[in-house]
Image 1 (cartoon, rainbow, N blue to C red):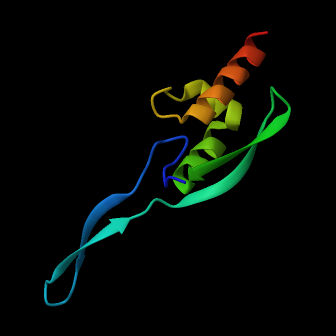
Image 2: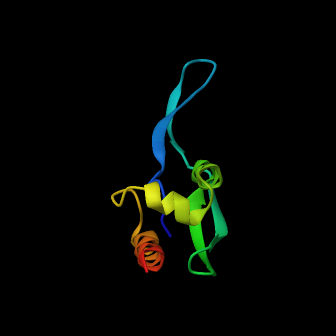
Length: 94
């Protein structure tokens, strides 16, 4: 399972641990990922995603899953999230 946000594409970054003596060793900075279940109002069902905490706050700020997908770019979304976005767009158009 990759450590990548399905909505924003955030992934691990690399950097250094720096000791008091300025010794540097490589380390990884992992994103704060959460397993969440989000409800779609237009489809009337829920979906499970692995998203970052920042993306979860953005979903709440924009007013839910449907509103988030309406404004999100396709390039940032994972394949599963893109399928859900297309389903929601089809349901709202009809």
